[in-house]
Amino acid sequence: MRGSNGKLLAADDKSDLIARMRALAGIPRAPARDDAVPQRVAPAFDTLDEYKLLTQHREIGHSQGVADPFFRLQRGRAGPIATIEGREVMNFASYDYLGLNHAPSVAVAAKSAIDMYGTSVSASRLVAGERPILRDLERGLTEVYAAEDAAVFVSGHATNVGVISTLMRPEDLVLYDELCHASILVGAKLSAAARRAFRHNDLAALERLLEDAAGAHERILIVVEGLYSMDGDVPDLARLVEIKRRYGAWLMVDEAHALGVLGATGRGLAEDAGVDPRAVDIWMGTLSKTLAGSGGYIAGSASLVELLKLGVSGFVYSVGLSPPVAGAALEALAVMMREPERTARLKRNGRLFLETARAAGLDTGLGCGHAICPIMVGDSLRAAKLSERLLAAGLNVLPIIYPAVPMQSARLRFFITSEHTEAQIRSAVEMTRRELDRLVADGVGLSGVAQRLASGWRP
Image (cartoon, rainbow, N blue to C red; front, top):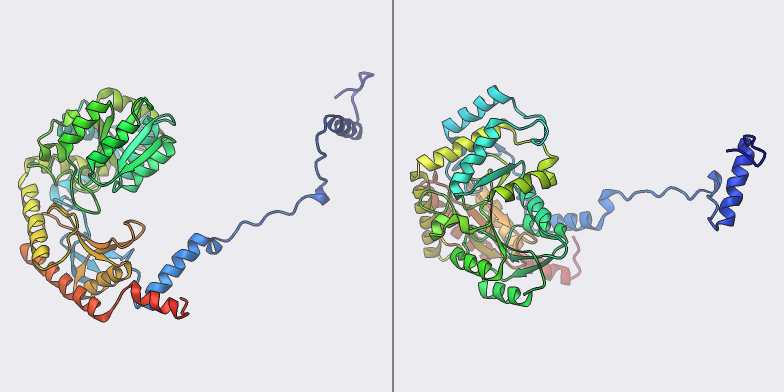
């Protein structure tokens, strides 16, 4: 910086001039180093209210003799039998619906993919991670849904989040069933679009929301699940298609738990309902259930898929699907299509579980006899304790409690597969009935905790 005489200013003169210019402009003087505000100390994570609440819930459980039912360590492959804590137990906590995680040809396909491509494609597909095996998997998925194209993602959760937040804008509207998966809600929230939930499978309520929104939004997205993951029931697809056409909306169906389960050949809700799959705008699913892998997919029109492959940040900026995962999913899809008897066996097992549970007087909620069947317990503490006692008796099934489900809707969620035997199903129901009766007789539940809190006890 030079002065009026054209000569370079000394450092002190330069600082003085800048200070006077800042003062004339009304800019506050920066504090001197010794006057600096003390550094703020970040809070420790164990002081956060959220962590304290977790700790309190855990202590309440422990005070009632309930161990944490989650993160149970298993050894080996989880099929109808699992190895937990060094012993074999019947397993109803795995969504390997068609047993393809154990299929020899699926393992061979995964190993062959490693030999051909390695364990990673080592880049985003957009730049250097594109491989023939990924396109082969996408072509296989297009055949299931009679779609023009498909895209596979590295995460099922991120598929819903990325797709919804990419397609929808603040001026748009997302309408979703109140029991939809959390990833759908996250995607809707990130899109900043208006969002409204309608009562579960209440399509009259959906129509009322659409009537109220008439003309207010350019884009409207309706989102439902093909098979509801907590309750085991299905929506009326034919009516949903009629509604979305009448109101000019897009329809998105999350098939995470429906592929391989619904329909004569496992093609999902459209096959089960007798509806042309091309009538649905966006088919979403996961590779982690029937297809024995991990990740998600979208099937639909070529323009939709092109838009998503270039617009969803979770696709553009994520590494492509791991080759062994893609190889396993591709072969699992092929086995599903050439062995429909797996789906038929699963259907028989699902109906058997539902009928046996109802005959035993167990509350099966909204279950329809598919691969998911809830046993409603209501009380979260009792559900956790029931899971614990069943594990001790030789049965692995997990509790679903608040906030995953509403208060007073706690349950055990049974996953039924094509590989379970009739004896295992009947035994599981009998054990559940027996242990639940014992818990009720012992008065185990949150009501007992409430009484102790009222008397002044604190965990």
